[in-house]
Length: 318
Image (tube, rainbow, N blue to C red; front, side, top):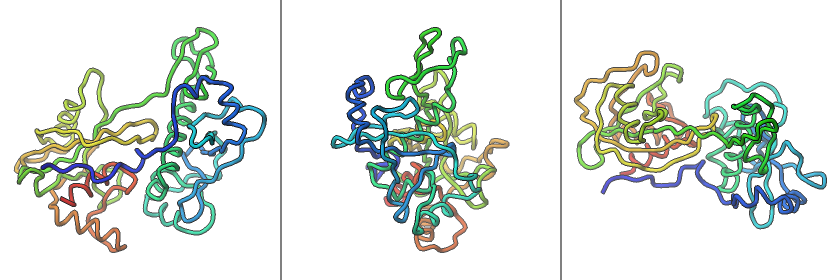
């Protein structure tokens, strides 16, 4: 038996109805707007959160019908959920996810992004926040027609744009990226995992390997290519684990596992990978335990909101 994800990735959780019919039913949209709840998001992908980082702060809908600058996130139990872009309350601090999470645990209202708040939110809130960030980020970058250059209009409750000049419709971009946990061949799930660090990451922070899918490439081929390019290791036994939206700005992370011969020498991609190590399951378990207990440890891990963390914890638990 090979390992699987032991839980649904945190940003893959959602409970609201996202039926396409809601996006073309103007009368239904007016009804959902009447008592709707509006999530405000700034250009940094932050929204106000309170109650120790667990509760999203909504505005009440105003006016007889939804304005042009809002997007429909979905419906749950007759309540319409919407989102809009607002001005930023100050600059985005340069802090890692652990610092953001400490802020999120404090009393009061704080503007937090998905990396910080995703692990605290319930399934409904996580799904709404993730969708809002993805849609609003796309609208910020897709204001003009790719065909003729004219300014576009939002249609279908914000789930598409249409050019008033040439009629071209566009839909939100999603860029597929693979992320792969590579283990050795000591048994079905191995006893070591290959972790790497990008130069831009804090010293001591490591994760599994990832990369974007290229045109005309299968997901499995991308896994093999990216790992070989980044660390010079050939992999086999590639298998799918699960997926998670990662709207920074518009990725869909597709999780895989693969095996490799740990005796292969690593060859690090210049400028992309600064360090890469094989780490035992016991060491990984110690790193997870140290983080939960607030202890210092030489091996730092990706934040709990990421699918990378879910993959590592699932493998460590075998």
